[in-house]
Image 1 (cartoon, rainbow, N blue to C red):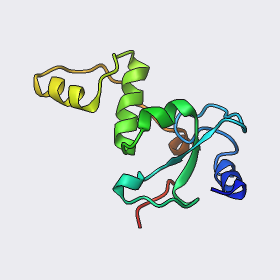
Image 2 (image 1 turned 60 degrees about the vertical axis):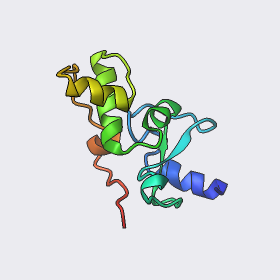
Image 3 (image 1 turned 30 degrees about the vertical axis):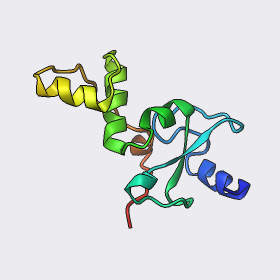
Image 4 (image 1 turned 135 degrees about the vertical axis):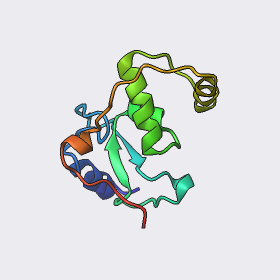
Length: 116
């Protein structure tokens, strides 16, 4: 990744995390593949978005729906579980406290990358 590509991605949000909306540090922000590479996402600036290390770590190789679920659970104070654990517990009738999580890009009216 070229420095110019990082600047292009940074400018998408003027240095705000694409997901949670916190102000990013220019020296330590990360780039996330909005559409994961494992799901066919590209390694181009069109698919890369600036985000904080925490959101990038929580998203991992998952998709945006999984990130929304995890951040909504975190916002509600629910314990952290893996996807496998959540799916198993849910199949047993466990209901997790949830809060609706609105991503920064949604509230700012930024159009996210889409699959081509």
